[in-house]
Length: 245
Image (cartoon, rainbow, N blue to C red; front, side):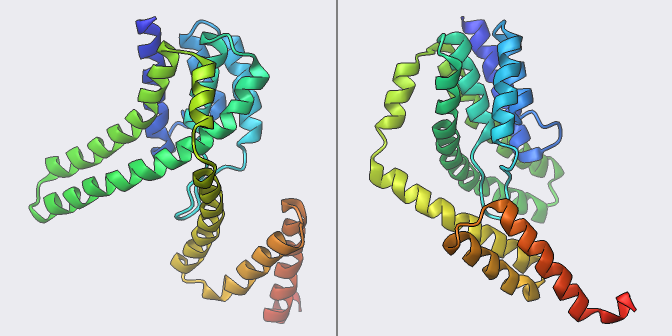
């Protein structure tokens, strides 16, 4: 049991690091669930859960300061609950959403902690200390990996769906409601920061038009995408009429 839990924690460690690096995509549900299923002796269940969660998380990505729900934690913990705690797959997949939301909060906390290592790297850079800079970056990555590895080990070792569900339900509604409101604002602020960093302030009107359409007209993403393409074509035709000629 301990060996299996340690292997799951190792997979979680890799997924936690990859959620920052995006090098090998270990944090994506299809890979994380498959690896978790492999080390727990049921790779088939891992692949099935990974495929299901991957479809749910296709649009989850970090934009600017906007932090998406944590796919790594959701994938590994839900797979460990299905295989280790014999939890039914639909229930585990339903639990993946609040787990991802809780992981999102944990990610924000960990990234705030990692600011310390960035300042430490700046200090070493002023001292021309290359090893110190490397240490600062690797230490920050290890903290990101432990963010997923520790919960993964605990769930794999003490796999008990009732306890996990009870913990999630123990969060006061005022906190969960506040997080939902803050999460909505963070997404908008994230997109605005990206436009600001691109030095493309002329795009801000399009940003606010999209926000108003999404917030007040109840149009889904497909509809907003079609409207955006039409507005972009009209904008290009008015701005660069000579291209068509």
